[in-house]
Image (cartoon, rainbow, N blue to C red; front, side, top):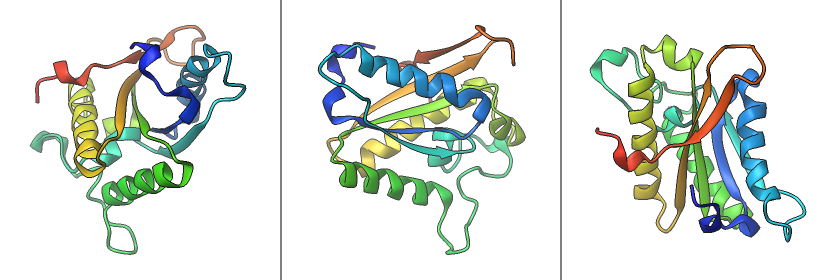
Length: 169
């Protein structure tokens, strides 16, 4: 990703998985981008976490995925996908931000429990970005995937920018 295109001074809303074993790397990845700009003394990162991360924004990836991640109703009768989209809109407005960073990670227990495998998770990331752009005009959305190559072994994990325009839906 071209870090020069990020509006670091305005900060961003980060949507990521709540998995504590992965959070340090994903948050650290984003914070490092801010440290590259000497004019910014602290990162402005507004974090929204859900098990499943950005996948919670979509209604369905494929029929093989079994019960739906996002269509699960909460007590108010709204879907988790709609609630998360509302929180993103609200956060952008309250914090006067114009950027969203969407994260997924692999392996993901929430995704696996819904039969969502890596290729489908990447498709889900693309769908999540499309949904945000459709519902929130003029927002910049960046997409990332954190990969843990060897679970619980330090130094074997990395976060990548994902060009979702190259993902076939």
